[in-house]
Length: 335
Image 1 (cartoon, helix red, strand yellow):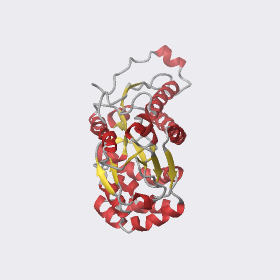
Image 2 (cartoon, helix red, strand yellow):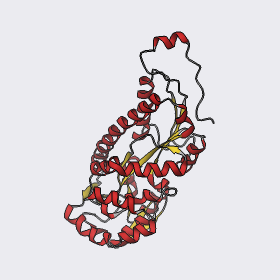
Image 3 (cartoon, one colour):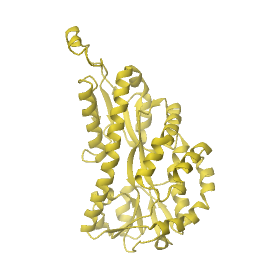
Image 4 (cartoon, one colour):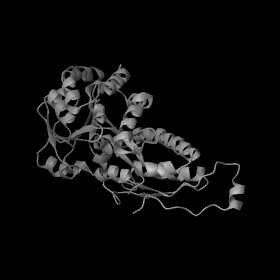
């Protein structure tokens, strides 16, 4: 499938009618998404496409494939680089295979920072530094700010979690990644890597005591049926997503089109980040209706746990191959 199709040329008469506005004559951009139609990310990418289409007088057009119809999350990055897809928005752990510095989001120095503070960290230098590396490695264009994935919570079956001390000796499912293993080891918990599809049965059978995940995942999959009773926000991981556009498509746009694309993307991003917080709060409330009560770690508890985690941070930085420049950008934001 081609990533775009050339629209018919705009006639001279139509061109004269639009002379007062910038001239747009872009191609239809194919966007591959890994989320279903009801998911916030899919809803927001549709809003982006609609808004940009209107602002370009209908010349910038899009075709969106949700639910991994076109490419899976793991294949989308290369598909955009090749031109088999025009655009994707991917979680940064997938991109760390290409740019190791994306592992910076897992470092303990960020523990306790709010969603807003971490977003500001990205917007004030860290995002540009990461995007430049990714663009150079993959030959794509990052058109603007990073979307938020929201907080990564812990959800358990029988054992309540109100502090880091409660996590000691627990078997906690993680989606994978050396950083998560090291973080849990530092506080006396054990990491068990497994795909999300295996989690309900693993919880029911007691293979794991808890799982990492967002409230949307727990609610959407009715995990109370798998025995989940308790939620815990440890102040740790908040995920982000990187937008990427095929460079051939991007280079075919005029400067006006590129500027409109970037400004509209950043506008949508600010709205998406706020909606993530709103939906997160809504899903936590819905989980409470099913008996799943979520606790937040206190600032004092986070500070105490950080003593253990920060003791292994240098080892994490070395193992994950995070550059000194990126570490410094994160450290400055975390002060």
